[in-house]
Image (cartoon, rainbow, N blue to C red; front, side, top):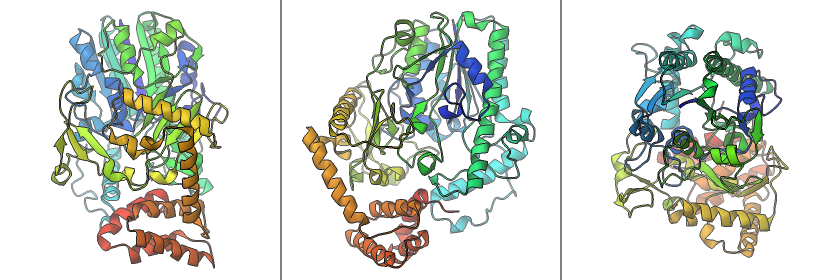
Length: 592
């Protein structure tokens, strides 16, 4: 018995031919759909990259208890469980986050692993005397922007060492996976994970794929600033063209895996899973990127394909709810290994063989952002309450961020809590969160969509009864996953006990928004986003009121502009706080 999992990062389902009739050329995904069962209601869990991978190793949500970080000492790791039960496990990946602090405990769980270097500013090739001092670095508003500039500089050095398609990380990653298959085609009891960073940005694409979409390497460097949309039509076309070209390249290399399975007739004894961790916004809902906006289905609803040789269903689709937390249980079940009691995901063989529903509801989201739930028809997005950031804590025994350890300052005041039900009796550190992305999500408010009737989620609905039902189910799932108690207050769920409570909350929100926006006109919607960001990021009530009065006065003559918001920050916010405020402002309204 064997399993091949081919995983792409940031793969949008509406750009794949089995899901949507777009202009993106993906013949091998169509070929894949003919060989497998396609899941049409498959969702992300924790977001983004490494939180999703923790879900896919442990079969439980990361995002309720902490942000980006390593596997914890108490975590049950699917590849390690396979290894401990005599199944050889091998990972091939070019996803650089595995060898940074916040991903450092994932790949050692496999029997062996091959790390393909060079993606997204990976500290791979030396850049001594090559743009070490980056022009303009000292003028940037935040450490986050500075890190991105440094990454772009490193990425340019890396790309200079990859002039040909065979040098590209996607080529090398898939080739390394095929090498494992060639060398072990006669062996049994193995699990191979071929994991591609593509089509994640920065979009690094050979010219021949770009030509298919009328764009060129001369047009764009592939880097994308996550932001609210005010792209020109031409820049929009170029960015989307780059992503489409990279998806087509991913399709071509998926075809190489399918070719090998056909050539060696692996279909008779080898499970195949093709999946992604999350999607992406490319102008939908006027957003670009991920993690700074509500988690619309372009990010959360994922492509997923599976072939199980024991069940042999193919060229079919299913509408049953499923999620990334189901993947480890599915693989363990295929090898007849019992899943651990703390693994909340369920084997998809229940769906494939018996057409049984695994879930009647699923949670998904980023740590500290909106908490989201779907029941297969509706999606409900629940925003944090205003001014509740102090309630948010991370729970960990491995205090590391995406690319660094927790600082001494961050660990000041950390305490040991009682065990959660999944920590194997261990107390864990409770650390006050300083997650910058959690500091202004409340401005989006709560949203309810019927995505069966409104698949593009363009029309939020006002249905008190359905919203209350979703809240009841949300609280039940949070309890089932032993969510920290303070999250109920963080999301205002502790005050919702009836439909009348929901109605009252709606009325209060309406009054607050009317007061907030009264007599203010905006030049464009991204400026309104910036204003709402300032309202939530500035904690001084007098300053907030002065901002409102200033904009009301300015609106008497002309609509408010971005420049006026920036000027107000420069003149009114203390210098030591301007970096954070400007960072938040620039996230929510594009800075060219």
